[in-house]
Image (tube, rainbow, N blue to C red; front, top):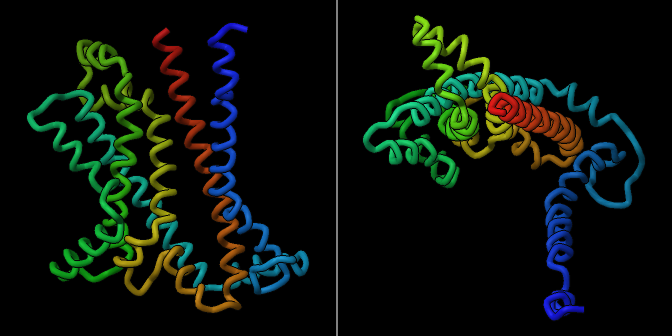
Length: 276
């Protein structure tokens, strides 16, 4: 055995330690989350082991709660509107930073991305003070405004990565052939960035749907689902229904994340094939 090999053997394989750390980290993150659907089928209002039995009545209770359904509909409405608006703004921003050069571009981009780094409780309090100062009534509209501020950087990050490797000569060729800037965007740019747009829509919808702190500060009389769930945690008999709905949201969120990543990877693969 050579000296380097002996030294490596004494020190141990770093790959094994890294793999064990990764497994422990994933277990720490996801085991508590996986307990959510498990207890949603427990025939008891108490979240504890051992389980008392198997039941689906908590799902029936969740869908029979009209207040919970109203909160769910509110979150779906806000999430859909926020996903569309933030993706449009993110697309404009991504196109600007990848196609043009202007003074202070880095500073402007940093300001757009700033909501990702500001603690959400600070952002929520600041928006609440601003909205109260200009005397706008708290409602789902104010919630959507706050969510757009938070989700636009996500959309811009996704779409910038998509546009950054885009062959600009295709747009130039379209313009040389007499197409207007709008038709060039619609016929050339949009089809090629469509996977990124779909990925941005799904990602921003998930972020908006799951957002609690901004919704807590900016919601009025009609709460979003995360705010409603938080308000129900004070009542033990409501907890199983909340767990059931939370389990469904967890499953749907995972599916949307997988679809968003699949679409993003599909777009990346198509771009590599086109370059080749």
